[in-house]
Image (cartoon, rainbow, N blue to C red):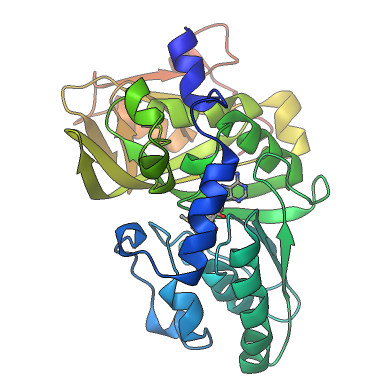
Amino acid sequence: MNERRSSCETDENEVSRDNVRDFYSKAAVTAQESLCCPTQYDDGDLSHIPEEVRGISYGCGSPVNRASIRQGEVVVDLGSGGGIDCFIAAKYVGETGKVFGIDMTDEMLGVAQNNAVRVAENLGYSNVEFKKGFLEAIPLEDNSVDLVTSNCVVNLSVNKKEVFKEINRILKPGGRFLIADIISEKEVPVDMRKHQELWGECISGALTLAEFLEAARPNGFHGFHIGKDYLWKIVEGIKFYSYTVEAFKAHESESSCCSSLTATYAGPFDSIIHDGTTYPLGIAVDIGKETAEKLRSHPYSGQFIITDPDAETPAESESDSDSCCG
Ligand SMILES: C[S@@+](CC[C@H](N)C(=O)[O-])C[C@H]1O[C@@H](n2cnc3c(N)ncnc32)[C@H](O)[C@@H]1O
């Protein structure tokens, strides 16, 4: 019980935010090869972004370009670093939208703020603002944001549960998060968790997928989409993967009347992909009614446990569970 708690809410003695901050204040000034994941950005997304920003891009995925951003949306990037994802989002949301970058490291904020001026010149409008703050205490109003992104940062937090609480607080009802992060194939051993350098390199603070979802779920997020993108590193025999996880904050009407169906893959493989969604072994994934029907049928029959958390009887026998949220 204690062991599981410590994975999401790390003992401050094991690692501190100051260490992570020191690590990234250096990485803002001198590019760190060991941190550069093979993130693929589209050239068209980068053309307005100065080289200095691209040179200190330390993400592990492309959350912004996968988030179907609409013009006029308010987007927040957590752990914005040199600002690459904020600047990409700035183009997607357009002049009527707004992008906030949140970071705790002065040197990173300095690079981002300086380059925001050039990005604004290139785009012809200014819609990006960087704020100093922690993921665990985001300096933004409640219910004020359409989309939260984060690229390889949640693993660095010493209190992941608090991060998801904060994401839930700032999102508007119906808003969404899309997070790229490093996920470990099995629980990171305590000794490795104490390793400051490996923590800074996005290894020691990584959670398993089950732990990551355990930190996110209590906040009422639903509609989880989980993508396993690539194997990043093997450290002390443990595999670390880049994943992208998306989920939605419930609309007010949904939170009182409905919660989604879930499907838990029961094996025999580590995971299975259906319609672009990964169902990891033993982990409940939110699904809609139509998907539930498909997963109950050939060729999947018998491989998934399908439940409705609010129903007293199994979801299979429910007839009107979608009466007020489609
Ligand atoms: C791996 S870098 C990623 C930067 C950026 N997302 C990118 O793709 O280039 C991690 C960034 O998150 C910031 N960071 C780490 N932990 C944080 C926390 N708890 N609160 C705020 N910022 C944090 C660091 O200062 C650093 O800029």
